[in-house]
Length: 537
Image (cartoon, rainbow, N blue to C red; front, side, top):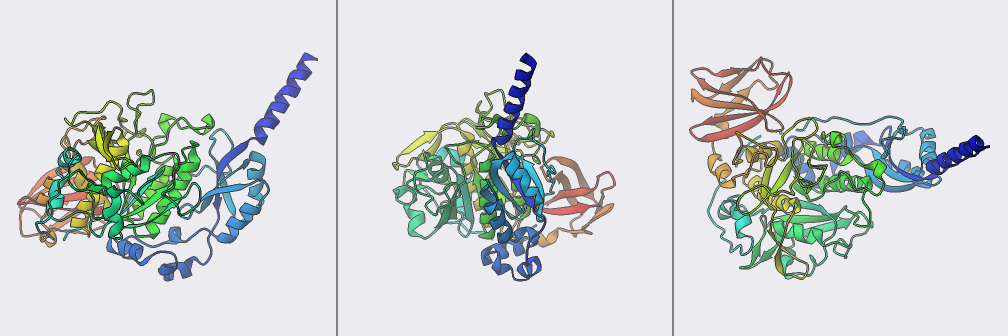
Protein backbone atom coordinates (compact mmCIF):
# COMPACT_ATOMS: atom_id res chain seq x y z
CA UNK A 1 0.00 0.00 0.00
CA UNK A 2 2.82 2.38 0.88
CA UNK A 3 4.50 1.70 -2.48
CA UNK A 4 1.27 2.34 -4.38
CA UNK A 5 0.74 5.64 -2.55
CA UNK A 6 4.29 6.67 -3.34
CA UNK A 7 3.85 5.78 -7.01
CA UNK A 8 0.63 7.80 -7.23
CA UNK A 9 2.37 10.77 -5.60
CA UNK A 10 5.28 10.59 -8.06
CA UNK A 11 2.94 10.39 -11.07
CA UNK A 12 0.83 13.26 -9.71
CA UNK A 13 3.97 15.35 -9.11
CA UNK A 14 5.16 14.71 -12.63
CA UNK A 15 1.77 15.74 -14.01
CA UNK A 16 1.90 18.98 -12.03
CA UNK A 17 5.43 19.61 -13.26
CA UNK A 18 4.39 18.93 -16.84
CA UNK A 19 1.42 21.32 -16.46
CA UNK A 20 3.63 24.16 -15.20
CA UNK A 21 4.13 27.02 -17.59
CA UNK A 22 7.48 27.03 -19.35
CA UNK A 23 9.28 29.51 -21.61
CA UNK A 24 10.74 28.54 -24.96
CA UNK A 25 12.01 29.79 -28.29
CA UNK A 26 10.07 28.47 -31.29
CA UNK A 27 12.16 28.60 -34.47
CA UNK A 28 10.65 28.68 -37.96
CA UNK A 29 11.70 26.99 -41.19
CA UNK A 30 11.56 29.97 -43.54
CA UNK A 31 10.35 33.49 -44.29
CA UNK A 32 8.12 34.87 -47.00
CA UNK A 33 9.02 37.13 -49.94
CA UNK A 34 12.71 37.15 -48.99
CA UNK A 35 14.07 37.93 -52.45
CA UNK A 36 11.60 40.79 -52.96
CA UNK A 37 12.38 42.28 -49.56
CA UNK A 38 16.15 42.19 -50.13
CA UNK A 39 15.71 43.68 -53.61
CA UNK A 40 13.62 46.49 -52.06
CA UNK A 41 15.34 47.09 -48.73
CA UNK A 42 13.34 50.22 -47.92
CA UNK A 43 10.40 47.90 -47.24
CA UNK A 44 12.27 46.40 -44.27
CA UNK A 45 14.88 49.01 -43.24
CA UNK A 46 15.14 52.79 -43.01
CA UNK A 47 17.35 54.66 -45.46
CA UNK A 48 19.65 55.52 -42.58
CA UNK A 49 20.12 51.84 -41.80
CA UNK A 50 20.77 51.04 -45.46
CA UNK A 51 23.34 53.84 -45.71
CA UNK A 52 25.15 52.64 -42.58
CA UNK A 53 25.29 49.08 -43.85
CA UNK A 54 26.53 50.19 -47.27
CA UNK A 55 29.22 52.38 -45.73
CA UNK A 56 30.64 49.42 -43.81
CA UNK A 57 29.99 46.73 -46.43
CA UNK A 58 27.41 44.96 -44.27
CA UNK A 59 25.28 42.68 -46.43
CA UNK A 60 21.50 43.01 -46.28
CA UNK A 61 20.28 39.43 -46.12
CA UNK A 62 17.47 37.12 -45.05
CA UNK A 63 18.07 37.93 -41.38
CA UNK A 64 16.86 41.50 -42.05
CA UNK A 65 13.50 40.20 -43.31
CA UNK A 66 10.73 40.17 -40.67
CA UNK A 67 9.22 37.01 -39.21
CA UNK A 68 6.28 35.68 -41.22
CA UNK A 69 3.18 37.38 -39.74
CA UNK A 70 0.99 34.41 -40.67
CA UNK A 71 3.24 32.15 -38.60
CA UNK A 72 3.00 34.55 -35.66
CA UNK A 73 -0.80 34.58 -35.91
CA UNK A 74 -1.02 30.80 -35.94
CA UNK A 75 1.23 30.51 -32.89
CA UNK A 76 -0.84 33.16 -31.06
CA UNK A 77 -4.01 31.22 -31.86
CA UNK A 78 -2.58 27.93 -30.60
CA UNK A 79 -4.08 26.57 -27.38
CA UNK A 80 -2.52 27.94 -24.20
CA UNK A 81 0.33 29.84 -25.90
CA UNK A 82 1.34 33.43 -25.12
CA UNK A 83 3.78 35.14 -27.49
CA UNK A 84 6.13 37.44 -25.56
CA UNK A 85 8.78 38.44 -28.12
CA UNK A 86 9.95 37.86 -31.66
CA UNK A 87 13.30 37.86 -33.47
CA UNK A 88 13.84 38.26 -37.19
CA UNK A 89 17.58 37.61 -36.86
CA UNK A 90 16.91 34.15 -35.44
CA UNK A 91 13.49 33.70 -37.12
CA UNK A 92 11.77 32.73 -33.91
CA UNK A 93 9.23 33.64 -31.25
CA UNK A 94 9.66 33.59 -27.48
CA UNK A 95 6.56 31.96 -26.01
CA UNK A 96 5.08 30.85 -22.70
CA UNK A 97 2.81 27.86 -22.06
CA UNK A 98 2.76 24.38 -20.58
CA UNK A 99 5.30 21.97 -21.92
CA UNK A 100 2.41 20.03 -23.49
CA UNK A 101 1.06 23.05 -25.35
CA UNK A 102 4.50 24.14 -26.48
CA UNK A 103 5.36 20.61 -27.65
CA UNK A 104 2.14 20.52 -29.66
CA UNK A 105 3.51 23.33 -31.82
CA UNK A 106 5.84 20.78 -33.43
CA UNK A 107 2.95 19.54 -35.57
CA UNK A 108 2.94 22.86 -37.45
CA UNK A 109 4.82 22.40 -40.71
CA UNK A 110 6.65 25.73 -40.42
CA UNK A 111 8.08 25.05 -36.93
CA UNK A 112 11.70 23.96 -37.34
CA UNK A 113 12.63 23.46 -33.69
CA UNK A 114 11.85 24.36 -30.09
CA UNK A 115 14.45 25.39 -27.53
CA UNK A 116 13.28 25.51 -23.90
CA UNK A 117 14.62 28.13 -21.51
CA UNK A 118 14.86 25.32 -18.95
CA UNK A 119 17.91 23.44 -20.19
CA UNK A 120 16.80 20.28 -18.38
CA UNK A 121 13.82 19.89 -20.73
CA UNK A 122 14.10 18.15 -24.06
CA UNK A 123 14.35 20.50 -27.02
CA UNK A 124 13.63 19.39 -30.55
CA UNK A 125 17.00 20.86 -31.41
CA UNK A 126 19.49 22.81 -29.31
CA UNK A 127 20.26 25.89 -31.37
CA UNK A 128 23.62 27.32 -30.35
CA UNK A 129 24.92 29.01 -33.44
CA UNK A 130 28.39 30.49 -33.63
CA UNK A 131 28.81 33.62 -35.68
CA UNK A 132 32.02 35.30 -36.64
CA UNK A 133 31.95 39.05 -36.19
CA UNK A 134 32.36 41.41 -39.23
CA UNK A 135 35.13 44.92 -39.99
CA UNK A 136 38.08 49.69 -42.61
CA UNK A 137 39.23 53.50 -42.76
CA UNK A 138 39.30 57.30 -41.95
CA UNK A 139 38.10 61.10 -42.50
CA UNK A 140 38.66 65.11 -40.88
CA UNK A 141 39.79 67.60 -38.16
CA UNK A 142 39.19 70.98 -36.48
CA UNK A 143 39.22 72.65 -33.03
CA UNK A 144 36.07 73.90 -31.42
CA UNK A 145 34.00 72.79 -28.42
CA UNK A 146 34.75 73.42 -24.76
CA UNK A 147 32.31 72.31 -22.07
CA UNK A 148 32.14 73.01 -18.36
CA UNK A 149 31.56 69.41 -17.29
CA UNK A 150 30.86 70.14 -13.65
CA UNK A 151 30.40 66.95 -11.66
CA UNK A 152 31.17 64.83 -14.75
CA UNK A 153 34.64 66.36 -15.25
CA UNK A 154 36.70 63.58 -13.69
CA UNK A 155 34.97 60.65 -15.40
CA UNK A 156 35.36 62.31 -18.80
CA UNK A 157 38.94 63.48 -18.33
CA UNK A 158 39.92 60.04 -17.01
CA UNK A 159 39.40 58.80 -20.59
CA UNK A 160 40.74 61.99 -22.22
CA UNK A 161 37.33 62.12 -23.86
CA UNK A 162 37.25 65.91 -23.51
CA UNK A 163 39.88 65.96 -26.28
CA UNK A 164 37.28 64.50 -28.64
CA UNK A 165 34.88 67.30 -27.75
CA UNK A 166 37.59 69.93 -28.21
CA UNK A 167 38.03 68.69 -31.78
CA UNK A 168 34.26 69.09 -32.23
CA UNK A 169 33.51 65.38 -32.00
CA UNK A 170 30.56 65.51 -29.62
CA UNK A 171 28.39 62.81 -31.20
CA UNK A 172 26.85 64.93 -33.96
CA UNK A 173 25.25 62.70 -36.60
CA UNK A 174 25.72 59.54 -34.53
CA UNK A 175 22.72 57.61 -33.20
CA UNK A 176 22.81 55.81 -29.86
CA UNK A 177 20.20 53.38 -28.53
CA UNK A 178 19.96 52.76 -24.79
CA UNK A 179 18.40 49.50 -23.57
CA UNK A 180 17.32 49.68 -19.95
CA UNK A 181 14.51 49.38 -17.40
CA UNK A 182 12.86 52.80 -17.44
CA UNK A 183 13.40 56.46 -18.35
CA UNK A 184 11.05 58.50 -16.15
CA UNK A 185 11.51 62.24 -16.47
CA UNK A 186 13.60 62.23 -19.64
CA UNK A 187 10.70 63.88 -21.50
CA UNK A 188 10.41 66.71 -18.96
CA UNK A 189 13.70 67.13 -17.05
CA UNK A 190 15.95 70.13 -17.63
CA UNK A 191 18.89 67.73 -17.82
CA UNK A 192 17.66 66.47 -21.21
CA UNK A 193 16.08 69.71 -22.47
CA UNK A 194 18.96 70.38 -24.85
CA UNK A 195 18.44 67.05 -26.62
CA UNK A 196 14.66 67.49 -26.72
CA UNK A 197 14.73 71.07 -28.00
CA UNK A 198 17.13 70.15 -30.79
CA UNK A 199 14.99 67.18 -31.87
CA UNK A 200 17.67 64.62 -31.09
CA UNK A 201 15.56 62.51 -28.71
CA UNK A 202 14.21 60.62 -31.67
CA UNK A 203 11.87 57.99 -30.28
CA UNK A 204 11.60 54.96 -28.05
CA UNK A 205 9.49 51.96 -27.14
CA UNK A 206 8.53 49.97 -24.07
CA UNK A 207 8.95 46.35 -25.17
CA UNK A 208 7.83 45.07 -21.76
CA UNK A 209 4.39 46.72 -21.79
CA UNK A 210 4.21 46.98 -25.58
CA UNK A 211 3.51 50.69 -25.77
CA UNK A 212 5.13 53.90 -26.99
CA UNK A 213 5.42 55.55 -23.58
CA UNK A 214 8.99 54.75 -22.66
CA UNK A 215 8.94 57.66 -20.19
CA UNK A 216 6.24 56.24 -17.93
CA UNK A 217 7.45 55.05 -14.57
CA UNK A 218 8.25 51.36 -14.79
CA UNK A 219 9.32 50.94 -11.19
CA UNK A 220 12.87 51.96 -12.01
CA UNK A 221 14.75 55.12 -12.93
CA UNK A 222 17.88 53.17 -13.78
CA UNK A 223 17.63 54.07 -17.46
CA UNK A 224 17.30 57.78 -16.71
CA UNK A 225 20.57 57.72 -14.79
CA UNK A 226 22.52 55.64 -17.30
CA UNK A 227 21.23 57.78 -20.17
CA UNK A 228 22.37 60.93 -18.37
CA UNK A 229 25.99 59.78 -18.61
CA UNK A 230 25.63 59.87 -22.39
CA UNK A 231 23.19 62.70 -23.12
CA UNK A 232 22.72 64.72 -19.94
CA UNK A 233 23.43 68.46 -20.11
CA UNK A 234 23.11 71.04 -17.32
CA UNK A 235 25.32 73.98 -18.16
CA UNK A 236 28.15 74.29 -15.66
CA UNK A 237 26.93 71.28 -13.65
CA UNK A 238 26.96 68.19 -15.85
CA UNK A 239 27.71 67.08 -19.42
CA UNK A 240 27.45 63.55 -20.82
CA UNK A 241 30.06 61.98 -23.06
CA UNK A 242 28.03 62.35 -26.29
CA UNK A 243 25.90 65.45 -25.70
CA UNK A 244 25.13 66.11 -29.39
CA UNK A 245 24.20 62.60 -30.58
CA UNK A 246 20.73 61.35 -31.53
CA UNK A 247 19.03 58.89 -29.18
CA UNK A 248 16.51 56.06 -29.04
CA UNK A 249 15.36 54.75 -25.65
CA UNK A 250 14.12 51.17 -25.35
CA UNK A 251 12.73 49.48 -22.24
CA UNK A 252 13.62 45.78 -22.33
CA UNK A 253 14.06 45.08 -18.62
CA UNK A 254 10.96 44.06 -16.65
CA UNK A 255 11.69 45.09 -13.05
CA UNK A 256 8.84 42.87 -11.79
CA UNK A 257 10.41 39.66 -13.08
CA UNK A 258 13.80 38.23 -13.97
CA UNK A 259 14.40 35.70 -16.69
CA UNK A 260 15.25 34.97 -20.32
CA UNK A 261 12.09 36.74 -21.51
CA UNK A 262 14.04 39.97 -21.03
CA UNK A 263 16.86 38.59 -23.19
CA UNK A 264 14.34 37.96 -25.95
CA UNK A 265 12.96 41.49 -25.59
CA UNK A 266 16.50 42.87 -25.75
CA UNK A 267 17.20 41.06 -29.03
CA UNK A 268 13.94 42.36 -30.48
CA UNK A 269 14.95 45.90 -29.45
CA UNK A 270 18.41 45.45 -30.98
CA UNK A 271 16.76 44.43 -34.24
CA UNK A 272 14.61 47.57 -34.09
CA UNK A 273 17.75 49.64 -33.46
CA UNK A 274 19.47 48.09 -36.46
CA UNK A 275 16.53 48.79 -38.75
CA UNK A 276 16.56 52.44 -37.62
CA UNK A 277 20.23 52.93 -38.46
CA UNK A 278 21.56 53.06 -34.89
CA UNK A 279 25.36 53.18 -34.62
CA UNK A 280 26.00 52.46 -30.93
CA UNK A 281 23.97 50.51 -28.36
CA UNK A 282 24.51 50.87 -24.63
CA UNK A 283 23.36 48.04 -22.39
CA UNK A 284 23.67 48.42 -18.64
CA UNK A 285 22.09 45.03 -18.01
CA UNK A 286 23.44 41.56 -17.33
CA UNK A 287 22.02 38.05 -16.93
CA UNK A 288 23.41 35.09 -14.99
CA UNK A 289 21.50 33.87 -11.91
CA UNK A 290 18.66 35.16 -9.72
CA UNK A 291 15.95 34.22 -12.24
CA UNK A 292 12.38 33.71 -11.01
CA UNK A 293 12.64 30.14 -12.25
CA UNK A 294 16.01 28.73 -11.06
CA UNK A 295 15.87 26.15 -13.86
CA UNK A 296 16.45 28.96 -16.36
CA UNK A 297 19.61 30.25 -14.68
CA UNK A 298 23.03 30.07 -16.28
CA UNK A 299 26.17 28.38 -15.08
CA UNK A 300 29.52 30.14 -15.25
CA UNK A 301 30.45 27.64 -17.98
CA UNK A 302 27.68 29.16 -20.12
CA UNK A 303 29.49 32.50 -20.27
CA UNK A 304 31.22 31.55 -23.52
CA UNK A 305 29.65 34.25 -25.69
CA UNK A 306 27.64 31.71 -27.68
CA UNK A 307 25.15 30.17 -25.23
CA UNK A 308 22.94 32.90 -23.72
CA UNK A 309 20.31 34.10 -26.19
CA UNK A 310 21.17 37.74 -25.49
CA UNK A 311 24.86 37.08 -26.19
CA UNK A 312 24.06 35.39 -29.48
CA UNK A 313 21.87 38.38 -30.31
CA UNK A 314 24.70 40.75 -29.42
CA UNK A 315 27.04 38.92 -31.80
CA UNK A 316 24.43 39.21 -34.52
CA UNK A 317 24.06 42.94 -33.83
CA UNK A 318 27.83 43.25 -34.29
CA UNK A 319 27.60 41.39 -37.58
CA UNK A 320 24.93 43.87 -38.65
CA UNK A 321 27.41 46.71 -38.16
CA UNK A 322 26.46 48.22 -34.80
CA UNK A 323 28.89 48.76 -31.94
CA UNK A 324 27.65 47.45 -28.60
CA UNK A 325 28.96 48.77 -25.29
CA UNK A 326 27.97 46.54 -22.37
CA UNK A 327 28.37 46.50 -18.60
CA UNK A 328 30.62 43.75 -17.29
CA UNK A 329 28.27 43.16 -14.35
CA UNK A 330 28.43 43.77 -10.61
CA UNK A 331 29.28 40.25 -9.45
CA UNK A 332 32.87 40.83 -8.40
CA UNK A 333 32.10 40.37 -4.71
CA UNK A 334 29.72 37.45 -5.16
CA UNK A 335 30.24 33.73 -5.64
CA UNK A 336 29.48 34.17 -9.36
CA UNK A 337 32.43 36.53 -9.79
CA UNK A 338 32.73 36.71 -13.56
CA UNK A 339 31.16 38.80 -16.32
CA UNK A 340 27.47 38.31 -17.13
CA UNK A 341 25.65 37.96 -20.47
CA UNK A 342 25.82 39.72 -22.91
CA UNK A 343 29.19 40.96 -21.62
CA UNK A 344 30.64 37.55 -22.51
CA UNK A 345 29.94 38.02 -26.23
CA UNK A 346 32.98 38.49 -28.51
CA UNK A 347 31.02 41.07 -30.51
CA UNK A 348 30.67 43.59 -27.67
CA UNK A 349 32.95 46.05 -25.91
CA UNK A 350 32.60 44.98 -22.27
CA UNK A 351 33.24 47.68 -19.66
CA UNK A 352 34.44 47.11 -16.10
CA UNK A 353 34.43 49.67 -13.30
CA UNK A 354 37.17 51.68 -11.59
CA UNK A 355 37.22 54.50 -9.07
CA UNK A 356 38.47 58.06 -9.50
CA UNK A 357 42.05 56.96 -8.83
CA UNK A 358 41.86 54.39 -11.62
CA UNK A 359 41.79 51.43 -9.25
CA UNK A 360 39.62 48.35 -9.70
CA UNK A 361 36.17 48.59 -8.09
CA UNK A 362 35.72 45.34 -6.20
CA UNK A 363 32.09 44.85 -7.31
CA UNK A 364 33.07 44.86 -10.99
CA UNK A 365 32.70 41.43 -12.61
CA UNK A 366 35.96 39.84 -13.66
CA UNK A 367 37.14 37.80 -16.62
CA UNK A 368 38.00 35.74 -18.43
CA UNK A 369 35.05 34.21 -20.29
CA UNK A 370 34.30 30.51 -19.98
CA UNK A 371 36.24 29.93 -23.21
CA UNK A 372 39.17 31.94 -21.83
CA UNK A 373 38.82 35.20 -23.77
CA UNK A 374 39.88 38.50 -22.22
CA UNK A 375 36.97 40.32 -20.59
CA UNK A 376 36.26 43.01 -19.62
CA UNK A 377 37.77 44.78 -22.61
CA UNK A 378 38.41 48.13 -20.91
CA UNK A 379 37.26 50.10 -17.86
CA UNK A 380 35.75 53.48 -16.96
CA UNK A 381 34.60 55.15 -13.78
CA UNK A 382 31.86 53.13 -12.13
CA UNK A 383 32.51 53.81 -8.46
CA UNK A 384 30.92 57.15 -7.52
CA UNK A 385 30.06 58.04 -11.12
CA UNK A 386 28.22 61.33 -11.59
CA UNK A 387 24.63 61.01 -12.85
CA UNK A 388 21.47 63.08 -13.19
CA UNK A 389 18.54 61.70 -11.20
CA UNK A 390 14.83 61.98 -12.19
CA UNK A 391 14.40 64.99 -9.87
CA UNK A 392 17.06 66.72 -12.02
CA UNK A 393 19.60 66.69 -9.21
CA UNK A 394 23.21 65.79 -9.94
CA UNK A 395 24.36 62.95 -7.72
CA UNK A 396 26.55 59.84 -7.80
CA UNK A 397 25.88 56.15 -8.33
CA UNK A 398 28.09 53.09 -8.45
CA UNK A 399 28.09 50.09 -10.76
CA UNK A 400 29.28 48.98 -14.16
CA UNK A 401 25.86 50.28 -15.22
CA UNK A 402 27.50 53.71 -15.31
CA UNK A 403 30.97 52.90 -16.58
CA UNK A 404 29.29 51.47 -19.70
CA UNK A 405 27.35 54.60 -20.83
CA UNK A 406 30.29 56.85 -19.96
CA UNK A 407 32.29 54.74 -22.41
CA UNK A 408 29.47 54.41 -24.96
CA UNK A 409 29.23 58.16 -25.46
CA UNK A 410 32.98 58.49 -25.94
CA UNK A 411 32.91 55.60 -28.42
CA UNK A 412 30.20 57.35 -30.46
CA UNK A 413 32.28 60.55 -30.58
CA UNK A 414 35.36 58.63 -31.73
CA UNK A 415 33.35 56.90 -34.45
CA UNK A 416 32.06 60.30 -35.55
CA UNK A 417 35.69 61.24 -36.25
CA UNK A 418 36.29 58.11 -38.34
CA UNK A 419 32.91 57.25 -39.91
CA UNK A 420 34.38 54.94 -42.54
CA UNK A 421 35.90 52.68 -39.92
CA UNK A 422 33.94 49.58 -38.96
CA UNK A 423 32.70 48.71 -35.50
CA UNK A 424 35.47 46.13 -35.10
CA UNK A 425 38.20 48.58 -35.99
CA UNK A 426 36.92 51.17 -33.52
CA UNK A 427 36.75 48.54 -30.77
CA UNK A 428 40.28 47.40 -31.47
CA UNK A 429 41.64 50.96 -31.38
CA UNK A 430 40.03 51.45 -27.98
CA UNK A 431 41.52 48.22 -26.62
CA UNK A 432 44.98 49.07 -27.91
CA UNK A 433 44.90 52.49 -26.28
CA UNK A 434 44.30 50.82 -22.91
CA UNK A 435 46.68 51.73 -20.10
CA UNK A 436 47.73 48.09 -19.61
CA UNK A 437 47.26 46.79 -23.15
CA UNK A 438 50.50 44.80 -23.05
CA UNK A 439 49.74 43.33 -19.60
CA UNK A 440 45.96 42.93 -19.32
CA UNK A 441 44.32 41.58 -16.17
CA UNK A 442 41.07 39.78 -15.39
CA UNK A 443 39.92 42.77 -13.34
CA UNK A 444 40.73 45.64 -15.71
CA UNK A 445 41.02 43.99 -19.11
CA UNK A 446 43.24 46.26 -21.22
CA UNK A 447 42.80 49.10 -18.74
CA UNK A 448 41.71 52.71 -19.19
CA UNK A 449 41.50 53.74 -22.86
CA UNK A 450 42.97 57.06 -23.97
CA UNK A 451 40.83 58.75 -26.61
CA UNK A 452 43.34 61.54 -27.11
CA UNK A 453 46.02 59.02 -28.01
CA UNK A 454 43.69 57.35 -30.50
CA UNK A 455 42.64 60.56 -32.18
CA UNK A 456 46.14 62.01 -32.26
CA UNK A 457 47.75 58.87 -33.66
CA UNK A 458 45.42 58.47 -36.61
CA UNK A 459 46.10 60.66 -39.61
CA UNK A 460 42.88 61.27 -41.44
CA UNK A 461 44.59 61.86 -44.76
CA UNK A 462 46.97 58.91 -44.97
CA UNK A 463 44.70 55.91 -45.36
CA UNK A 464 45.81 55.34 -48.93
CA UNK A 465 49.43 54.93 -47.84
CA UNK A 466 48.84 51.47 -46.40
CA UNK A 467 47.32 49.16 -48.98
CA UNK A 468 47.33 45.46 -48.14
CA UNK A 469 46.74 42.66 -50.62
CA UNK A 470 45.52 40.07 -51.41
CA UNK A 471 42.48 39.84 -49.16
CA UNK A 472 41.43 37.06 -48.58
CA UNK A 473 45.02 35.92 -48.20
CA UNK A 474 46.57 32.47 -48.07
CA UNK A 475 50.24 32.80 -47.09
CA UNK A 476 51.82 36.21 -47.87
CA UNK A 477 50.23 39.60 -47.14
CA UNK A 478 51.79 42.35 -49.26
CA UNK A 479 51.92 46.08 -48.49
CA UNK A 480 51.81 48.62 -51.30
CA UNK A 481 53.83 51.46 -49.83
CA UNK A 482 57.03 53.35 -50.54
CA UNK A 483 57.78 53.43 -46.83
CA UNK A 484 60.08 50.44 -46.24
CA UNK A 485 60.00 50.66 -42.45
CA UNK A 486 56.62 49.48 -41.21
CA UNK A 487 55.51 48.01 -37.89
CA UNK A 488 52.95 45.25 -38.36
CA UNK A 489 50.67 43.93 -35.62
CA UNK A 490 48.15 41.17 -36.18
CA UNK A 491 45.37 40.57 -33.63
CA UNK A 492 42.31 38.38 -33.26
CA UNK A 493 38.87 39.99 -33.41
CA UNK A 494 38.79 39.82 -29.61
CA UNK A 495 41.90 42.00 -29.47
CA UNK A 496 44.56 39.43 -28.57
CA UNK A 497 47.79 40.28 -30.40
CA UNK A 498 49.31 37.17 -31.95
CA UNK A 499 51.99 38.55 -34.24
CA UNK A 500 54.19 41.65 -34.27
CA UNK A 501 57.12 42.37 -36.53
CA UNK A 502 58.95 45.20 -38.24
CA UNK A 503 58.93 45.22 -42.02
CA UNK A 504 62.36 46.42 -43.13
CA UNK A 505 63.36 46.35 -46.82
CA UNK A 506 60.61 43.92 -47.69
CA UNK A 507 57.00 44.35 -48.75
CA UNK A 508 55.23 41.32 -47.25
CA UNK A 509 54.66 39.41 -44.05
CA UNK A 510 54.24 35.64 -43.92
CA UNK A 511 51.00 34.29 -42.49
CA UNK A 512 51.88 30.61 -42.74
CA UNK A 513 51.96 30.33 -38.95
CA UNK A 514 48.36 31.59 -38.59
CA UNK A 515 45.33 29.34 -38.65
CA UNK A 516 42.39 30.16 -40.91
CA UNK A 517 40.14 32.95 -39.68
CA UNK A 518 39.50 36.69 -39.54
CA UNK A 519 42.20 39.01 -38.15
CA UNK A 520 42.88 42.70 -37.65
CA UNK A 521 46.13 43.93 -39.23
CA UNK A 522 47.50 47.20 -37.91
CA UNK A 523 50.21 49.06 -39.80
CA UNK A 524 52.22 51.89 -38.22
CA UNK A 525 54.72 54.16 -39.92
CA UNK A 526 55.96 57.59 -38.84
CA UNK A 527 53.46 57.55 -35.95
CA UNK A 528 50.57 57.08 -38.40
CA UNK A 529 48.42 54.01 -37.90
CA UNK A 530 45.95 52.17 -40.10
CA UNK A 531 43.93 49.03 -39.37
CA UNK A 532 42.15 46.61 -41.67
CA UNK A 533 40.34 43.32 -41.39
CA UNK A 534 41.70 40.38 -43.39
CA UNK A 535 40.51 36.84 -44.02
CA UNK A 536 43.19 34.14 -43.83
CA UNK A 537 42.20 30.90 -45.55
